[in-house]
Image (cartoon, rainbow, N blue to C red; front, side, top):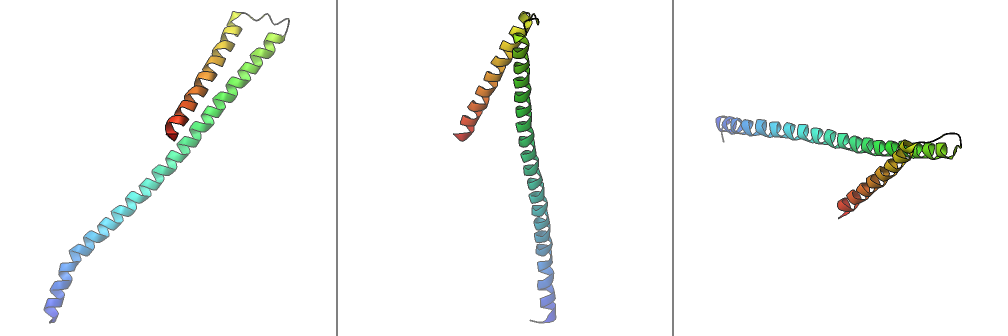
Length: 108
């Protein structure tokens, strides 16, 4: 092979190398974006868990307060307090049932 043939062979490889480099860079960028998306999803799931726990804690505090007020003889609780307490208890059980249903659904 003379130097002209080597040079032509080299020039023929250049577009392939450029395309290969571009594809590699694109794959790297996609991989980084995918990792960032997965990290955001983990954070979102953790946030949802904290929201659920906060709502549960607030409901428990509300129930405990309502029950404590009902025990005070001079409090004169009206029907609103009893209805709110029943509603809170119902919602708590409905939510717990929903979470259990979702857990079973995700397991199977």
